[in-house]
Image (tube, rainbow, N blue to C red; front, side):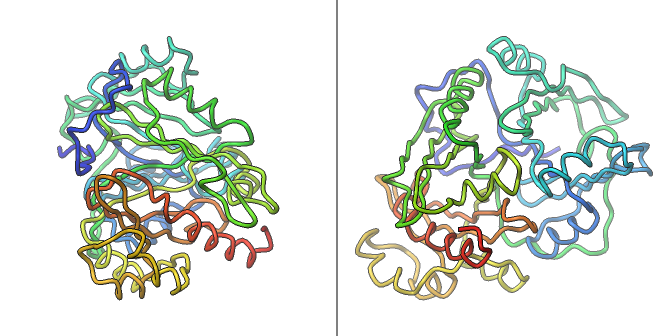
Length: 380
């Protein structure tokens, strides 16, 4: 079975401060708890080009939940819906709406991963267990993180099935073409006032991550709102988790809006990589995906700031794609509007042309775009 390790441009670039007691091979899957998995799966296939992979439900012996597994490149989404009124998943959806519950990490040893993290202070979510079927066995374990988000460690070196034991291949006659999404570049968590450093310390102490970048309210602010952020990465750079918290501003920031409507900390957005952002975003727009609006004036001076790029500026301007540069190259990025009814979870599409950073030069334009959306919702 193909694994789901990411392939950033510079995998050899090791984060020197990160410890290696918790080797992580990549993101195995991201599981969302949703109100209607069947319809959500249709959306992610139609709008984002994901392909049918696996299914679990009543037909496979699951009595309390139904899950659809979708795949594109090395990205795997699991969409899960409760099947009974008593299911605890219902409470999660009632409180948070549709959102990320599990960020599963692919490891060589799920038992050791659980032991190393829990002895460093992580709260156990799932003790190591082995599940198996005719295709082999998988060992998994898990820990709690911010809010109700959890990490599940997946050890699948002895498994050759479609996804996990308990799932069957999902045969579908409807499989729209991929839009060119390759892997998860990073995943951003929003936490409450004064909680950023708590979770930065958690990822450093419990999981051996190192801090790559720090942004304060001077870096990420507009006339009205501000936030602070620190980016944590594991040693091989395949897992990157920026952690955001609100900062004082004249009006309510996007982080405060998220926490109000999600009712707590959670995953704000999933950044997915492409090798051709113009083609990818053009396809997404045609399929109905909505993106934040960037004023055309942004492009009047952007090349003065970032220098020469390979792409023609006009299609980037037409699509609203942002550009930024660091010491190692440049990147192209764009952000969807929320993909759920509450103003919570969204996606970032990113193409890295050498850059290892996160678009600091675009923060002001991005936040002003988000503020326009907040104003339309009456939540600014």
